[in-house]
Image 1 (cartoon, rainbow, N blue to C red):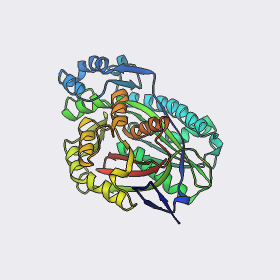
Image 2 (tube, rainbow, N blue to C red; image 1 turned 45 degrees about the horizontal axis):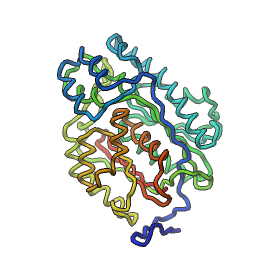
Image 3 (cartoon, rainbow, N blue to C red; image 1 turned 90 degrees about the vertical axis):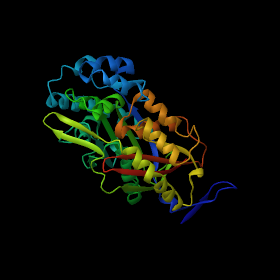
Image 4 (cartoon, rainbow, N blue to C red; image 1 turned 30 degrees about the horizontal axis):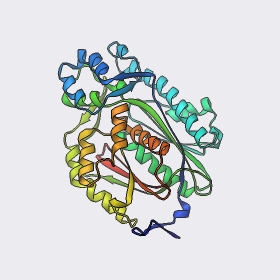
Length: 362
């Protein structure tokens, strides 16, 4: 079955629209320790060195929340203590976000049939959603799908996998949980440029999206289609080197170059397969990767100056939240939604190097 949407100047044909799941609720939570970028610079310069200030002042970040008070980071004994803090704080934030998103969706924890969870800033076995299950009252037969290693792309990739699941089970409810405590991965003995850039950009938070299958009512946007893209020979562009000291950042200057080379054509091809062009997209939900990447996306897609305003606001107010970033942007967009029938596109990039696209309609 096809549905034709759009006005006099745009006729967009979306196949099988009656099977599309909907976003029913979105919530984002942050740890209570909130600092200006100047305060963060003051706390980290002691071990990051004077060069850190230069990167921090050009990061586009003005405020960040951190898992621990800034005074604690210099006292962490190592990876074990940092990871223990991660599990404790991540669970608290996850519980708050999950309950808030379910309340927005007018659902209970027992209504959830499947939970997708993602993180790349801490290790937990059992995974976070398993530790959360009894704590908030998820059913014993809830399906758990933990994802690890997707990094910044995981918010959009998780949305895509929720879409896939609910297309198969249109009577069900699925939740995506993303938790990132990036500050706990800071390497105090690493003065490399990648570590200084990462330390200047990343913030902490948790996000939850609750979505429902097509046979259930929901007031939020429909999730129409998704696409994944992995670029060959880019494994060393972004990721972690994991060792005895924890998570060491891998961050290449080539990211903007890859965006400039590939992303524009990939987005246009994805939209064209659904009868759309970039001019049909009124709402852009781009991961707040950093100023250079945001500028590169804006340029290759030839977007108007205000198209990525919500993304830049998220980066300025919360830093790069890794997988939580696009959920923060979705949350802000749903608080001030576009007009009914508007088309949105969620875009995120991460280790692989990879990109994920999620097509939405309000």
